[in-house]
Length: 182
Image (cartoon, rainbow, N blue to C red; front, side, top):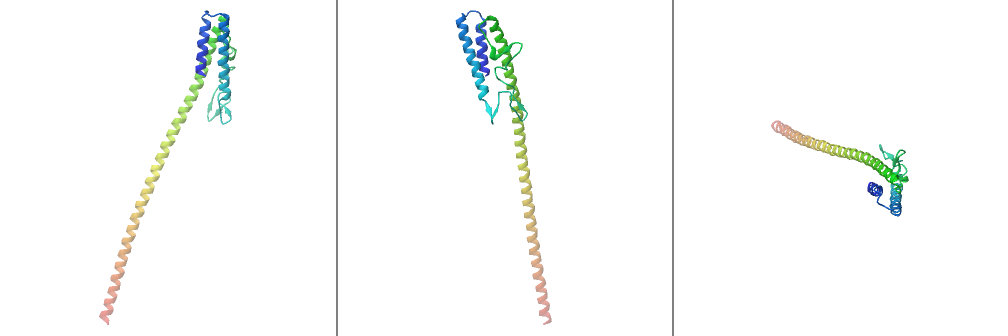
């Protein structure tokens, strides 16, 4: 849309120069009307999840986009993009102002979308970092538990060995006593 608006502006500046015949101005006007129609086609055909992105009705997750329709680009004061008529010098001058205003409005939309996109990207990065940190913490906890359980198992084996040794010694002492008495 920005490229088309810049082309329309170039044509309006060319028409305002005063060196064109009425037929030439009519041809430029026809070309501008084709570009305006193409902008409306882009606006009408750009949707996401069944919702128009550029029609001025999109509002999701804190992101709202103003209308890029040619009947709303411009202003009451300078006229709207859909009403451009460069066949007169005054109309061509007014068209330049209208297109400049439309370019500003599109730039504001792009800025708003870019800002929201940067916020989303930053939030995604923060969530990814948090997820990595959480997984690292969980891994440390699991590793610590395995080491602790391994130590407990070794202690139990040592105690079992000591108990078995003590039981064997006690049995030997009992057998020695029986041998002495017998």
